[in-house]
Amino acid sequence: MSFLWTTADLLAAMQGRPLGNLPEGINGISIDSRSLGKGEAFFAIKGDRVDGHDYAGVAIANGAALLVVSEGKLPALGRLIAPMVVVDDVLEAMIRLGCAARDRSAAKIIAVTGSVGKTTTKEMLRHVLLPQGRVHASVASFNNHWGVPLTLARMPEATDFGIFEIGMNHADEIRPLVKMVRPHVAIITTVAAAHLGNFKDLAEIAAAKAEIMEGLVSGGHVILNRDNDQYAFLERQANDLGVAHIHSFGANPRSDFRLVEFAGGSESSVLWAGIEGRTLEIPIGAPGRHIAENALAVLGAASLVGADLDKAAASLFTLVPEKGRGERHRLAVDGGSFALIDESYNANPASMRAAIALLGDAEPGEGGRRIAILGDMLEMGEFSAKVHAALSVLLKDAGIQYVWLAGPEMAHLRDVLPETVHVEYRENVNDLKAFAIDAIATGDVVMIKSSKGTGCGRIVAALLEKYPAFEDTGAAE
Image 1 (cartoon, rainbow, N blue to C red):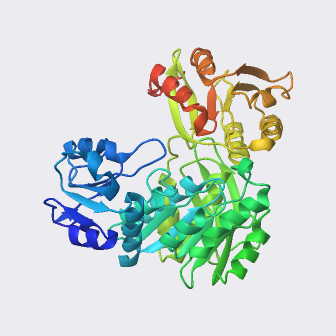
Image 2: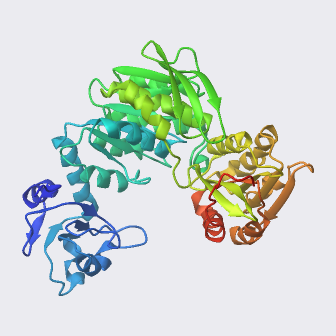
Image 3: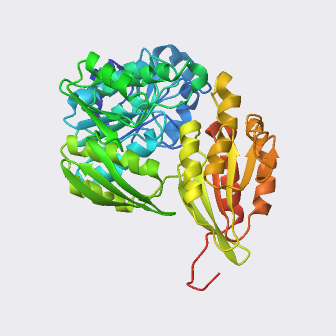
């Protein structure tokens, strides 16, 4: 049997002490006793709210091959009889294991950060590289102080391409994570007003994003957004750090991976990309100019790690937006249907701009409406009132006439919307949910966008629960 880790290698990497009858190896790693698979190691991480040691018994009952526990927690485990690896600190042991995984790997490693589009870009990379080799990538948005080492520790030795998302909401968070990952290629999708409440200005955000370049391997590559206002600063940072190869993407004529032309549709799009001295016509299975822009970085990175560029470009035709990040549903209502665009995973001013433009490009059915359901953008600090009110211009430019809002910060937008816009405002999400599930009509296109912490995903869930998937029989609605 092929193990992810033999127990001998596991013990050596983590500097652990064996306790009990340990198996020969493990086939996976989990930090959640509920989703743990048989034969996996359960790492009893202590988080802000939950201590994994409290669920050690559940993990064993669910098939854990062994437990990784802290020395100081052994007395609290009582009479639990199970194979264990005892370490000084479980998270630190997982970090050591992640670093050992990186040391043993010959994979080409790509790391992605940015204010907007990290997860979408990471998933696009996974999508285009899967047909060309063994790919290991972050699950969901595992991009923080435990998500990155966990993803590293889970990387099989026989990996061809490793893709890592690295996030932050404060300075000095990316630096230690990227030094574990040690990428061959780093992508900064863009710098925008995300987590603005934790920074003085965009320049500080750019400096924090630039930390990803500090972990590049010798001779590594960075890919920067040439259309972003912070490009010049990031290019200087790259030069100051001695980055060997600096590349750019965007519509700017000087971009290495250039957006020559873009044709947007309501369900898909076409990108003409200038790469490697050629212009490629690339159908993309997801709509939105922002998707096409990040696709340029994806194709550039794929080329730099030795993938076949034409095959990678062709793979974008089957790209499908993810849950909470543009996933689309067509749902049955009143003998017809409406379209639901789920953008509820997260929001900041830049991603709001992209989502509102996406709604503006969508075509309602006969008699239908374009409806923007918007929840608060969190972590905007003292800038919150200004950035929420500024959405009014974006909605006007996109021709959105129906705006349904929830949350105290969205009151700033409500107060500046013109009388020509049909506005529904509720202070909390549950009240807006109750209104929305009964106000949808045939032909509508509904886009839901908010920061995850607002709970606007509950509106998506309620609509999916009430309205079944629409089955197009070919008859007119």
